Image (cartoon, rainbow, N blue to C red):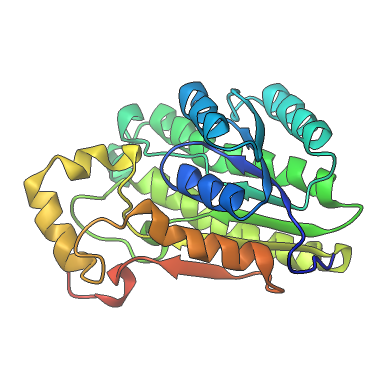
Length: 255
């Protein structure tokens, strides 16, 4: 599908805080129409109050297949057509007991993969259904932890595995749906100042570590730093790409 410059897009975004909120604001400000799925209801409502280009939201649990299917169907009806899907919903599995492989219970493993990998799979699947006829883009969200792991502070191995799987998902889907005009990519963030990163933000030892690990950001990345990467993947003729925005994390092999 070719979208001419100046034409507004019709975008589904999963999530409504942190990176998702920053992206939704940017899309709405440039005139795109947005529908939110799976965000926090209060955050989603606030974004709707900020801009008439945020057309609605569905406060659903994207780990639950029926809720995800229903929400994407509602989004498609509200937007009239869908040009792009951005899947951001996910989170740390630390609250479930995620840690090093030998310390992680099967329950913690399953819960963490459900929060990150299942939500992404269902969003990808339902997005493909909406885009199959006319093409468009789907942008997923990985993590630098998947490709540049560290030995301390961020040893949540189920989370890292789920994000590595998402990157594999991008490559497979990009190849499979190329002839349908559907582009599939992902953004690979470093540590971003979001609600998910509260533990790191409140620990001075981790903060000093991050300042060294992400020197270009001087610490945690602001969520707005990720927005240009998402917009690039939404707007341009690229597919199968993983775009890293990590403040230098993956370039520093010594820490």
